[in-house]
Length: 315
Image: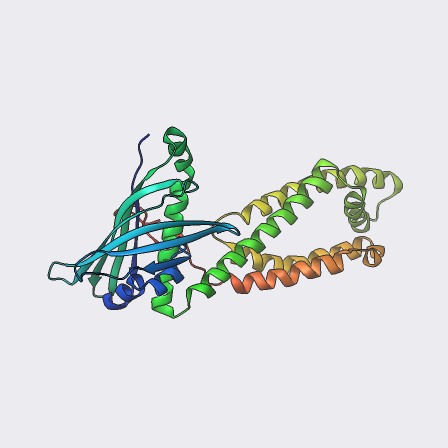
């Protein structure tokens, strides 16, 4: 099974000295690099020997991958470029990575520098490991690219990585919640089961708008059932939109406008619903506040899309 090395490149408006410091200092490096939880340098015996280190990556509570590495930095050419080579690995069987090599390269230009990396690794468990790597390798590439953009924003705008990652993952968490809410309410009470209350609310609106007679009212019930299904399909599409990598701020903004309208519509359709437990006033009100929080958090989020993932190609 053919595999391609992971390549990530990003332009930064920063000096090469700052970029070198923030990437070669282990206490700074571990803050912006999503792939590492902690990095500890070993003391050198000789000045020209590679810098050896150990690292830890907390995969989840109670599960930590520990490994080793060594790096060596050098100046390149007369243009001030620098390169840092890397050799890394871990003996832990839980890690799909056995051992790998790569490099970081720093290329200065008038607007700052280009920071790039390329690395590859061998996997464990033969064909099974190669199969798992079909999923793991893109995930590693994404984590590298996201980390590079976090570093870029740290150097250019001064926002520390913890704040960036907190906003990023809270936005993801809120987006997954809204995806579940819209998907559930689209599938279960509107399409799969079609709860009577859903149909009656739409029927009441149709009746109020058409001043229907008894015969027309029966027709309105059938129309309401069809409309409810279409509303459910629309909610399902809206739910899936929250899983897309971009546009979340727009979705949160739409919800800020939408939830008051939905709440008012539900009350106009059936005023008694306002006194029911877990009614639209409290439920939609909570989601409205959460939409405002998501709207604020999602402003200018770090993104893996800011990096080039292939030489000469962005994204």
